[in-house]
Amino acid sequence: MRVRVAPSAVVGLAVVALLAGCGQPAATRPRPTASPTPPSVTQLVEAAAHTFMSQMVANNYPAQWNELAPQARAMWPSEAARTAFLTTKFRGAAAVTGFQMGAPTPSSTWVDREDPQVQVAGAYAVPVRVEFSSPAQVLPAGVATDYSKLELMLVPQASGPPLVVGEGPGSIDAPVIVPPSPPTETASVPILMYHVVAPFPNPAQWNSTYAYDLEYGLTVTPSQFAGQMAYLSSAGAHAISLTRLADFLLYGLALPSRPVAITFDDGRESPLQNAVPVLRNYGYTATFFVPSGLVGRYVTTRAGTNPQHYLTWAQIDQLATTGFWIEDHTLFDNTPLWGLPSSEVQQLAGQTGAAIAAQTGVPVQFIAYSGPWPFSTASQSGPAETTLFQELGQLGYVGGAVDARVDSAAQATGEIWQMPRVRMNPNEAGAALGPWLS
Image (tube, rainbow, N blue to C red; front, side):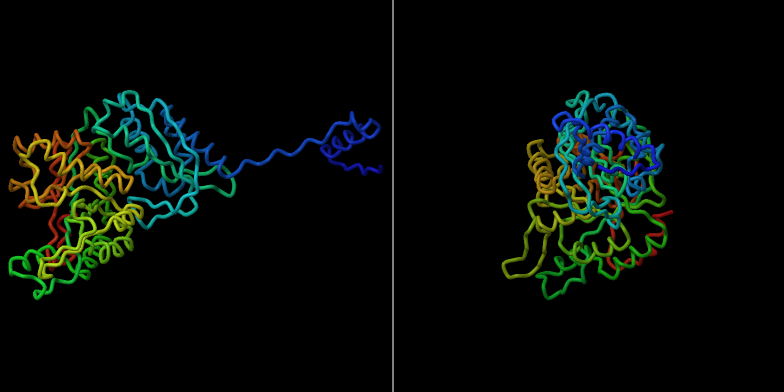
């Protein structure tokens, strides 16, 4: 056997080894070592997810920052703000003591729930179950169970380990945990309240002036809505979820500049058709308060007048998976909750929230109360409302949005159950939102 000796030391060692075996019997010659099989994408994702969760158990949030994809980092005010928030959130009864992981699976596109424009394709989903120090003491009731069915989302890289884009239990939009001693925070966040986004109703389709006037008063036309969103964008407003607002009120996590929350009551279909495309264009998230008993219904009188189209479950799923939030608006949006027996509150709110969560796979933690608030301003309340707040907390809710006679953008930690909103009426120019952003 002729062997050409190369000048490389590595090659030289290989040649020596080869020559050393040439004179040995075949049975005793060293067999060449097989190259190790490179890990699969699934194995890389699983390893990265395990590292990320192990760091969470160890409260090593700075190390996690280096493993976040740029899109995930952009959701936070800063690395320091993230570390401070998670350190405060996951302590005491809510301290993370362990975790369990499922098998990674290729998933559909990941969407940032605080900015529907931000989407990442090719992510892998890793089911995660978090173990708390004292799960029965973590508030609100049932939230520990919510942390047993979250997902990490990781994106493979051409070189290097996969990066985390959806942080699961550590995400900025993970279920809210109510701290035992929240700070005292105040904010000015206008929560815009829309109902119908459609052309004005046709009087011929309504059986009375009262019914027509009621529908007209709930309607903002598509062009008016587009003008309002264009104004918000030009004014530098940032749309946030109610979860993001709660992260500030309960933990002091800094809000973006000029925050605004956009909400739609009643579960009508028209906002999906006429408002959602505009929201996506500006990267604005929104919250849809849905009465679960009206899902999928087309309501008219026997004569076919007073038409009202409601979202289907398929459309609700579409919203929930493309960057929007689905929260509770009671069963049929026709019964105020304050003063009711707890059994009726359970039926009209608890069961409806559970139905929505079961459909979307996302916990329901906020409610828009049915009917006008019984006081002039949202900051006012009485014994019946205080009792209701306690009952809703026992059902897993964190806060509520009211429809008071006096609009306000004043939010406060101690009034998270009675957050005021700004009712959006017909024919309002975008510039009318200017004073609320100041």
